[in-house]
Length: 356
Image (cartoon, rainbow, N blue to C red):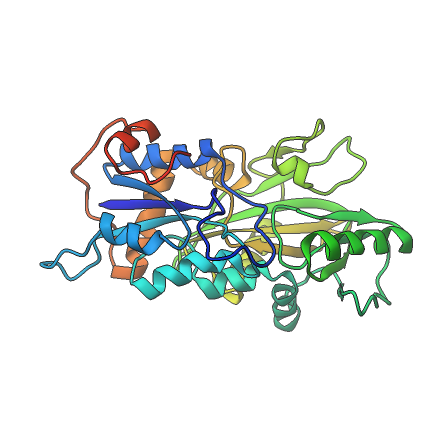
C-alpha cells in the first residue's frame, strides 16, 4: 500500500503566520524510524509536510484507482500542526475533507484532548477523578479553594510546555503571566497530587489493547513531575521509566478502566496514552489524555509496546491494521513490495517531498 508520512517541520507553507506557533515537531530520527518500519513492512512510502500543499501532494502520490472502490493509500499522521488552537486537528480535518484515510484520532478527538480544560470538565462530569482545578486568564485570576502546591500549564499545549509547580501566590502569578505572554492563552491551574505517576498506552478501537503500564520513577528528584526538559532528554535527572509498573492487579485494572473511559469521552481513535497520578492513600487521579502519544524511541508508549512483545516494525504494522479496519472493516492486505529504504532513497525516487 502507498503510505504517506505527514509531519510539520517547515512552518512556511501557510498563507499567513497568524496565531500561536506550534512549539512541537517530531524529530528526524523518529520520523525516519517510521519510514523505515513502513518500508520493512512492504509499503511504498512518501513524506510530506502538513501544510497548504498537502492535498495536492497526496493526490499526486496516491491518486485513486479508477477500478477500485477504495482510496489509493493512507496517511501515517505525525502532524502536530503549524499554528493556532486545536492545531492537532488541522491535518486530520484536511484529510477528512479530501477523503484520505489516516492513523490516529480525528479533529474532534484531538481538539478535546488538547484543550485540557474541556477534557477535565468532561472527566468531572463523568465522575472520573481528576485534580481540582481552576482556569486563569488575564481578566480573571480567581483560584480560591485550591491548595498549594499547584501545577500551572497552558490550556492548549502538550509535552509539558510552560508547566511549573508553584508553592505561593507570587509564584502562581508569575507562572500564569508567563503563559499569557509566551503562549497567548489561558492557564490551567490544578492541585498537585503527591504520589506515583503511571502512563497507560491504549491501542485499538472497538477492542482496545492495554499496553503494559509504565511508571515514572522520580526517586531522588526535588520536583516529582515530568517537565519539558525531561521529555526532550535535556535534564540531568530525567526520571527513569519502569515497565511493567509494579502495582497490584486490582489497581492496574482500575487504571485501565479509567483510561478507557477517557479514551471514549474524548472521542480518541486508534491509539493514545493516559497519564494518572496515584496519591499517598492509593487513590488515582487522571491528569490528561494524549491523543498523539509520542512514538519516539524513548517514549512511554513505545517502551510499553516493546514490553508487550512488539518491535517497532510490528507496532507500526499493527497501527496501520487498526486504522484500516476502522475505515474498511478488515486489516490491511499483505503488501508485495519491500526493501531497505531511507530518506536519501526516497529523495532519489522522488517519493519524499522534503529533506528531514
